[in-house]
Length: 476
Image (cartoon, rainbow, N blue to C red):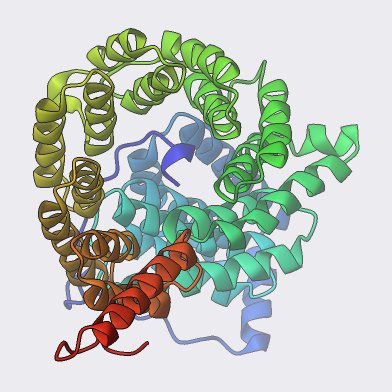
């Protein structure tokens, strides 16, 4: 996973299958009796082999702790060639497992998965084999998410299935573990965008750590960082679902547990704390947390801290403070969501023309969320009674969503209906709310808008009945 290692990952093509690259065929198997007789004659010492394995694993542990991934591969891959005596004795598994891990850190994900699969085939009931294969698939998905490698949709789907299958097996083999529950939670949350499926896994990781006694915690100290990260991610999932009390409880514990170890950055923890307080409307506490985060942050890399600090200042009615926060973000690093807040600030200052220009810039710049700037323009049009412009921007937002995401834009349909009602076109407005109801029946304020449109249609029908020769509106 990206946050668990710092080594640069470089995409490599999958290993070829030419004659030159294909491994040599294994020698013919000996009969059982001849094999045992040969071992007895050669006096192969089990103790010596075990000592050699321990030595190699110790060397690998040192290299791993120093992120010397290439040296690990150079020294011990392929295992059957580098340490043939261990391989012949059936002791190559542990070395191969370490090499698979190193391959992933080098961006050689195909080879990492291939080696990890081999480990599972060798030891189908081994916890480490399944955990290693799950991690190899999971790590490749993170590399694709961060655009270091390219996975086609079917490849991504198969990697997700592979990771889930082997995380589940590893959890079955070690149900009191922490790391594999945490990582599967991240697979759901960060890769599949399913925080509701991730939350129970994060909570299980936390519970499992809490159930360990002090001796077990000391022996498994390497899992403590994932217990702390699980607390942080559980807080995030609760906050996304609007359960701010639960989010605050998890995050405050995360901050306390991480006070000395520092597994998570101060910027991330206090930004999350500010975000929760902002969600509850406690802007004073939000501001304190965000200012603490900002003191540790780089405005170019942590622009989200200063953006939320600006929004907090706006919510407190302090546009000057909001502007000072936004001005700390370099102009060329202002992402669309920063521009949205900049536009809100300009509107608060009464600078509508400049706000429009900023929102248009955001719409042009944003390839994945262009509709969000267009909808802000539509609401601004509506407030200024320019209902035709509102319809134009709603239409653009809806087309963008249908083209990019394959579904209509619910907010665009809502404001389209509202604008049509104001333009005295209730029959068209009625069709827009029907479309919205079919797509999102519980959309906020849909029912009151629907009632207003129905009332206008009824009024027009009544007036038409009073004026002979005038066709009444289409019945509801």
